[in-house]
Image 1 (cartoon, one colour):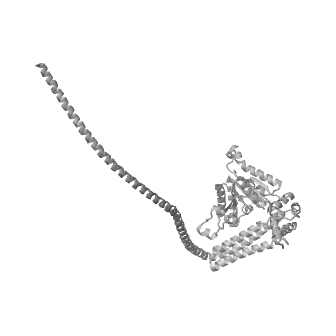
Image 2 (cartoon, helix red, strand yellow; image 1 turned 60 degrees about the horizontal axis):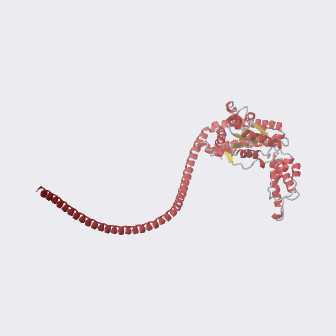
Image 3 (tube, one colour; image 1 turned 135 degrees about the vertical axis):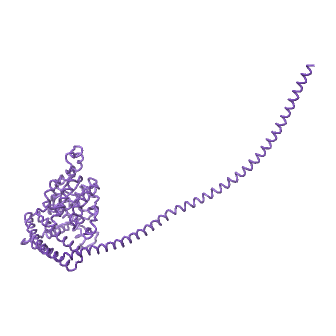
Length: 512
């Protein structure tokens, strides 16, 4: 959640993931019952999305239109008519995530931060290729102020300007949903490609809505008639949902065993009567009775009294100044939102609401001008004290934050180290078990290998002994052969000499 004091000292630290809530769509168009005209408009909107590439790429319109390539849709209609479900159904049909904008994180106490947050949600939707959804969009896309006299008016106009610029440059799908389309700034009419009116369901649609709100195993009595309920109560799908849940609660609270309990027609009718009675209670406002706006004026005076009290407390203690200032700004914001948020009244008494809001705003501005004049005098007197208090508060807060951050970081590091040591010991244990088993197996293999080597060494030794014996025998044979060869050689030499002598002798004898 946004923290103004933290943002003041250390800057805005909200991430884009905090500004939006990412939803994986589960509901489809089969889960919502709509009037035929509304369903046709939704089917046409879905066709625009699917044919976007054909229009801007293949037909070349993107070459002529550099901006406005995205598709923006405005779902307008009474509460409970299926706007939120249809936004989820479109995301489901496109197989994309749905990013729902969180206004509690987007709005900031400090000037300029809200506009940056608006740009951040569009950037996040572009990065994730998701459908961006602004529910209750009139809270951020309201009419801009023509005459700016206060800082919050300038900030509101800046936010709307940033929203218009981002919407013009966004190339994805963005959906606005509102119960108060008349409160939109007129500039959105051109930038929103398609405006779809979610009408109240007719009798046949209401009967189907009654049916789809119940599960197959929900026990129903024989007297339940959904067609009669659809004709009798001209309400929205949201009212029917509440009535179904109330009827189940009424049926279960009756005496008797749970196994025999069922939901009867009277339970549905009683539940719907309670829903309608609750709506009448919620429709009470400053326009009831004499219409002098006393209730809203009392709220305004209460907020102004709180503002004055906060300044007095600041001058007395000079402690907790930023928290009190944030509370005052929140109250003023609530007064402004209350002055613009009357769903039922605006629908039925639109002209009267505008007059009442203008009167209330004028009275509030007059009261605030008086307070501002008074505060200027107070501010001149306590400005040095305020500056000293702010400096002291900054120093104390910074030291406290540093100390807490150091302690928290130390605790986290200690916890992380212990966790890592445990994980490492566990991992080592897991790794050592098969390693030990493998070592034992290798030891057995080594023993078998050693025995085999010893056997082979013995065999080699025996083979060497046998080979040496064979070599000795061979040497003896070779010596014997050499002796024979030598003797034979000598014999042949002697025979040769004898032959030569005989030849010489024969020659001599022949010559004589």
